[in-house]
Amino acid sequence: MYLTSYLALAAILFCIGLYGILTKRNAVMLLFSVELMLNAVNLNLVAFSRLGFYPNVEGQIFTFFTITVAAAEAAVGLAILIALYRKKETAEADQYNSMKG
Image (cartoon, rainbow, N blue to C red; front, side, top):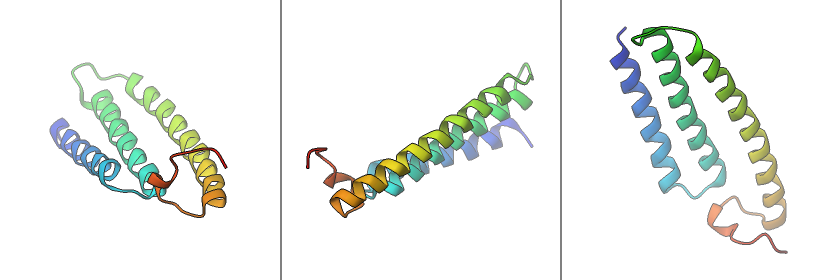
């Protein structure tokens, strides 16, 4: 496969994630959209590290760190969403405009 096919797939994934961020109101869907965008970045990093002008493992190392950050973001984000859901009893992001009781 060529580098352009990986870049096209990553662009499609990133656009789907961006569309989800801009249009969805559900907080869980917002987290999923951020994860899609991070996966598009990971795909670009791995594709450039394997098929770029100067192939090396640096892109794969950055991908490992990005996956670690994404896992931490998902865990903390879901914990916050569970706490907010228990408080407000809704998963709509526009209802979370205040952290006060």
